[in-house]
Length: 136
Image: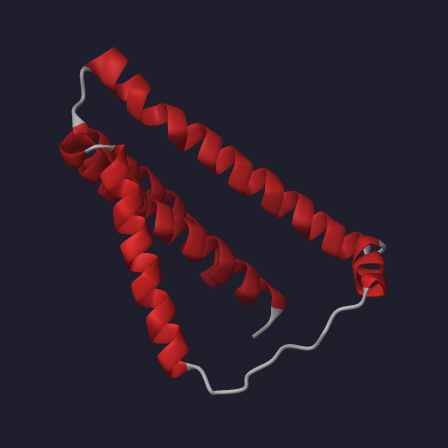
């Protein structure tokens, strides 16, 4: 997989998670409270952990990293630029989406269903634009 494809798959994963997760979290929190959101996340995480434990080969180990490897990464301008762009993109994405639901409710009176639809359409539009640009 080349660098562009890896980058696209990473950012697509975030977009898909937000497109599906935000409306779902909004729905659960609205009807059952914020504690139910964390309970649901914990249950899903436990299921995924059990599936990974069952599916991954036994004795799987990664290579140990030395402190010098972090210094090497820090001296790579390309990697530091990628990390900076990732930080800015995810920070901006989460900052904007956190305030969209309350703003929509205050200014338009939108309920959870409308907010969820708005968030889905926003993320799907951005994702489709990203995919069409990558395909060209």
